[in-house]
Amino acid sequence: MGIKELSLELAAISLVADQAKKRKDELRAQLKAEMDAIGADRVKAEIDGQSIGYVTTTKPRKKLTITNRRYFIQWVKENYPTEIIEEVRESFEKVILPSFRFEHGMAISTAGEMVGWLVEEEGEPYLTTKLSAEGREMLIDALSDHNFKMEVSLQELLEIE
Image 1: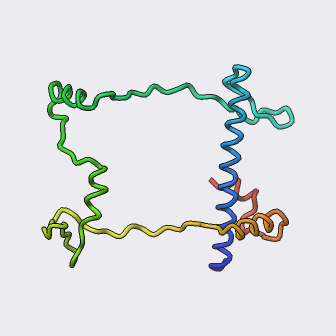
Image 2: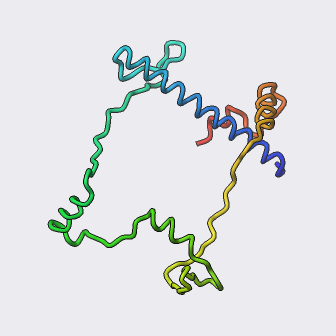
Image 3: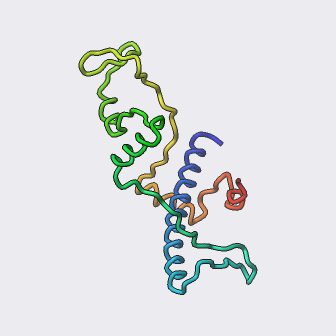
């Protein structure tokens, strides 16, 4: 398969995955409402009377929430002093780090101070699929009318693990 065919198939799979996720979310909400209405926490999925699995409402997980971080830190200082670390707020890092400039690989603050504790690295590139409104409709039509043949059939797609 060439680059054009690969990009078209990726666009098609992306569209199908996005639509499938939307439908899955809708079905989950509808089924949850139905199950709640009758007080069920488990429903059998069947094909021709044959059980193929179950949809189950999970039990809520307990979640611990610190309501006063300052008091918690003080308690840890008193009871577990070796567990206290000095740290810079993540929100401040997001503000201050982009203010540095780089010359010859060296980080320089807005005050002109050269610092050796900051490096600039290139992230890994990745592919993203963005369909235009018209392209989305064209692709839906092509998939619906079977005018577009993907390299992988739906059956093969379902067998991928």
